[in-house]
Image (cartoon, rainbow, N blue to C red):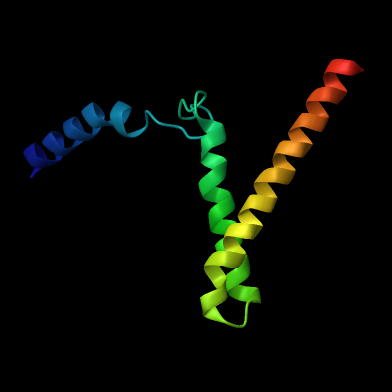
Length: 90
C-alpha cells in the first residue's frame, strides 16, 4: 500500500508543473496578432441570440441578425475611428 501511495505522490509531483503551468489571468494566451478577428464571431453570436429573443417569426432571424451584426461592426469601426482621431489630433 505504501508503494502505491509513494508511486502516486511521485506521479503527482512530476505532473504538478504541467497541470499548474497555465494560469489564465497571469499568463494569457498569445493572441496579439488576431484578437480583432475574434470580435466578428462574438458580434454574430450576440446578434443571433438577441434577434432570436426579439423576433416573432423564425424565418426572419438570419436576415435581421445579419443586419444587426453589420450595424454593430460599422458602429464599432466608427467609434474606433473617432477615438483614433481624438487621440491623434488632440
